[in-house]
Every structure is written in structure tokens, then in C-alpha cells.
Amino acid sequence: MGKSRKEYIYALKYRWLTPLYDPILRLTLREQTFKKALVEQARIQPGQRVLDLGCGTGTLTLLIKSAHPHARVVGFDGDPKILSLAQAKAARAGLEIDWKQGLAQELPYANGCFDRVLSSLMLHHLSSENKRAALREVLRVLRPGGELHVADWGKPQNALMRPASLLIALLDGYSRENVAGLLPELFRQAGLAEARQAAHYNTLFGTLALYSARKPA
Figure 1 (cartoon, rainbow, N blue to C red):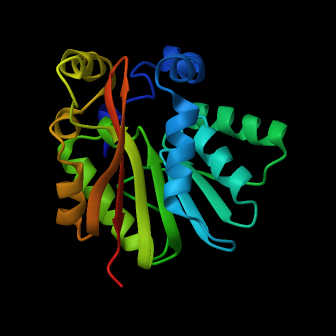
Figure 2 (cartoon, rainbow, N blue to C red):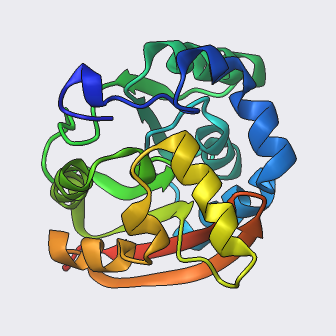
């Protein structure tokens, strides 16, 4: 996602790879494991409003709604083609989700309207400037005390993960700040508090980490 269409990076960098997104994640990234852990980490309550930012094909969005049927869930992404895949998956599952197209750094929502913002494998697509803009928008749309929960590439946890991280950088966008372990600092710079890395998973493409932060009350 970027301010100009030229900066926009699709889920696997190239649009023609979009249909392969779900099977690739299932086979290489322990997707169900880390996304279920992210949903559990968020501790969503009935009636809360939840934004899945950069929802892609909707796997995380559907997990949120399935685990918390009384939450109000929004799936948000910049790619209309991938959103159509997400909508089809939700229809097959019989889940009622609000889908919206737009850019992470220009969220079309009122101040303080979400209790939780979750995001999986989206932030590394953004340039440094757009990461910061998107995080400022997250702060704006969260209610006081609301929480951000993120799964994305993180600092390699061992020597094997360092060369693996290079693969994702070549394929998938602006990941330098991610692999340097800077996401919690970027959260703090945006005005979020209690920013931390909560867990990590070693994968074929490097270390994937779970993060959390909170909007000050």
C-alpha cells in the first residue's frame, strides 16, 4: 500500500501470483498457528469493533469472526481483486463481515471507532514513510485503551533465519525495518504505548513475530 499506485505492492508482489497466496502461506508459514495465536492475543470481547488492516484474502478476518461471532469485524485492503477472494470465502463460510477497499495511511473511519486493530503480513509492504502514516492512522481510529496486534516479519532469531529473511525482502517489499526489529519503536513513535514483541515463529522465509501495543487511555 502506498500513497501512489506506483508504490502499491500486491500480496506476493505481482498480481498474477495472487491466486497462489493462500496455498503458499499454508505450506510455508504455519499460517493457522500464528494467526490463531494473534487472535487469542487480542482478547476480543463481545460487541467490540475490530479492524483487520490489510486483510488480503480474509483468512485472519474469518478467524476473528469465527472465534468472536458477536464482535463487529471489518476487513480492509487496497486490492479489489484480493478483497473479492475474501468476500467469496466469507460467503462460503456464512460469516457476516464488512469489507472495505482503501489505503492504510488514509483510513476512512472516524476517530476512536475501533476497539482492536489487527494486521497480518501487511506493514512490511509499506515504505518507511507510509508505515509511519499508517500507524498514525491506527492510533487515530483506536478508542482510548484500544489495542493494535500485528503479525509480521521480525528480527531474525538465529543464524539460519538471517539468509531466509533476504528471500522475503527480494519478493515482498519494504522489510528492512521489520528485519531490524524496529516495529515496536515505530509503534512508540506513532504514539502507541506498551509496544512489545509477544512471540516469534521461525519459517522458511525468516522470523515471523507477533507484536502488540495500546492507545493510551
